[in-house]
Length: 135
Image (tube, rainbow, N blue to C red; front, side, top):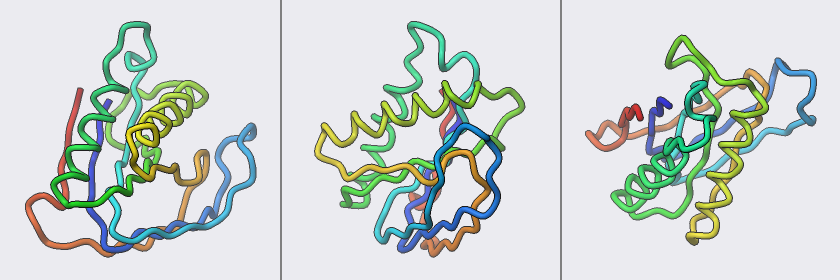
């Protein structure tokens, strides 16, 4: 798994092009003061015994604590590596990670999965505003 975390003063998305047939219709959204995780799920992340989902959750919580926020947005972003997991498996990992964050008292959500999105990002120029992790 490869993850690019951004702390955003504002992050907005608008689904523009559906790329997967088996995903539901989606709507635009916007969040403020949010940690956005651009997540690239790789094939090994879906195998039994993989710790990638746990590491995603722990790292997202760490970044959120550093910024003093409780909002975490998971954005599927399959452009951080060459190998990618099957879409259904990737979505399941993101959904389970979101559920775990919610159970840990974070406000967690996913952006439109299976779409190209127009993005509007406002982010600070700070060393902790953008962090890349690979596990």
